[in-house]
Image (cartoon, rainbow, N blue to C red; front, side, top):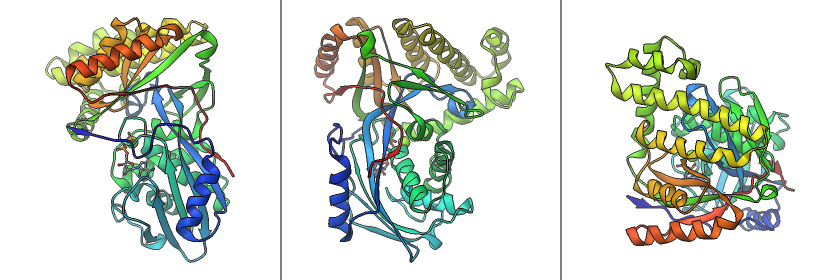
Length: 398
Ligand code: ADP
Ligand code: MG
C-alpha cells in the first residue's frame, strides 16, 4: 500500500491565472499567450460502465489544473509542472512516439501527438502547469492535465475543436500514448461539465445532458472522502475487469454489455453459469447502468434525496460483484451511512481513491467527524474530506 500525498493543497485557485502566468514567466522568461483551466471530477454514479458503452454521471470539482502556454514556431514542446520534479521536459513534436515521453510529461505530450496523428496543424509550445487536483486520488488529475493541454493547443493553433472532440483526443492520448486503457468519462467530464449540473453521458454515442444538481439549494451536500490510499492491485485489476466484461458481452452475443436490458438480467445470468466471475461483472454493469437511469429519473423529478439509496446500492455492487473496493472505502461508506448519510459509494477506478457521500447539510459535520474518527480508530491514514460543488468544465482564463 502506498499513501499518495497531494502535490498541492486541495483548495481552489482564487487567483489561479495570474499566479500560473507568473510561474510561466519565471520558468520560460516571457509572459504566456494565454491561461486555461480544466477540472478534476467525481463520478456520482455509473462506475466502469463507460468502457461497456453505458451511462455515467460525473460532475466537475472546483479543483483545477491550470496551464499557461505560448506557441513556438520551431516544433519544440517544453513542459513544466509545479507539481512534478525534474524541471523542464523538452521534446520535439516531430519525434513524439507512444511511450517516448515517459513520466508525467507523457500526458501533455500525448495530446500533441494525438492531434498531429489526427492531421491537425499543431506545432511546438511552452507549457507550465499548476494544479489543485490531488493526483492518484480517483479524482482524475490525468484527464484534467490532458484536457487543459488540449484546450490550450486548440486555442494557440486556432483548431476550432468542440469540447467533445478535445475529450476524444485526450482519451486517445491516454490510451495510445501514455498506455492507460481508460474509458471516455474522465476526459468528457473535464471538457464538458457545467456549474450546478451533473453530466449524464451516454458513452456509446457521447450524447450528453446537463442535469441540474443544485445541492446547496436543497440543503444537501456531496462530500468527497479521499482515503489517500491507492492499493497497487489496481492497475492489473482494471484491465482484468475490462477483459472480463468483454468476455461476458461475447458470451451473451452483444457487442457491449450496455445492450443487456436490466429486465432481461434474470435470463442472461444463467447463460454465464460456467464463469461465475464474469457473471458477477455482468451483474454489476447491467444493474449499474440501470441505477444511473434511476438517478437521472429521480433528479428530473426533483427528488434529490431519493438518489441516496441508489448510491449505497452501487457501492455494494462494486464491492461484492465487481470486487474493486477496499477496507478504507468500505469503512468510509459504512461509517457515513451509519452516521446518517443519505447514501455513499466509492467513486473512480477502485482499490483506494475516493468515496462520495450525500448528506443533509445539517449532518455534514457529524458524518465527517464519524468517518475521521473511524479511520483513526482503524489505524488508517487520515482521510481528506471536502464538499464537491458542481463546477465548470475546461475554459480559457486569460
Ligand atoms: P488520477 O487521474 O486519478 O489522478 P492517474 O494515475 O490516472 O490518477 O493520473 C495521475 C498521474 O497524472 C500522475 O502520476 C502524474 O503523472 C500525472 N499528473 C496529473 N496531474 C499532474 C500535474 N499537475 N503535474 C504533473 N503530472 C500530473
Ligand atoms: Mg486518471
